Amino acid sequence: MRLNPVCRLIKGNILNTPDYQSQHKKRLSHMPWLYFSLKPKLLNWAKPWQEQVQADFMALETVSFGENCFIAPEINLFAEPGRGIQIGDLCMIAADSFLHGPITLGDEVAINHGCSLDGGRAGITIGDQTRIANNVTIYAFNHGMHPDQPIYQQSVTSEGVVIGKDVWIGAQVGIVDGVTIGDCAVIGMGCIVTKDVPDYAIVAGNPARVIGDRREKV
Image (tube, rainbow, N blue to C red; front, top):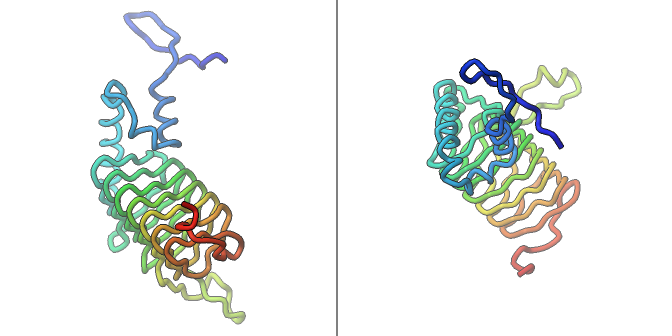
């Protein structure tokens, strides 16, 4: 397999060389956990790049980042005044995700590519060390559904979503407004979570139901 060459002008000569750094940035943006195992040689360019990405977001939006985070530049992050986003230490957010505050992430939270989080008015809170797989949807608001008025014209309610610490949320999960997920729970791939989930529960299905206890899997 041949790499696509990139033309570069060096002392009047055009050289075709592969652009490894741009490709590596794309790899990190979609698999951000790799950032935390980079060798010093690669960190020499990756760390300043990340510092600039985060500084750009902070200049444009009401967002704060903790220490040593990885934030893909391809995320869509929107945090107006009063709908801020707070991100703890050692967090990672992958490419093509959408975040609209208010959102609070604890430390070591991972959000993989293609996720969609909207905090509504009440907000989304996610505890330390929680892992969210790709294409997860969390909406902390809901529309009215009275039949005598178009849905888009009806008032919006927001109770908020709370996700505990050390939770594993599988790919393509949907979580609706008003739900609390307890510490150490596991949410199976493709679940639609419409009710609270206890600590350590393993849930699956649509709608999600408890099928086990994580402490019994030791």
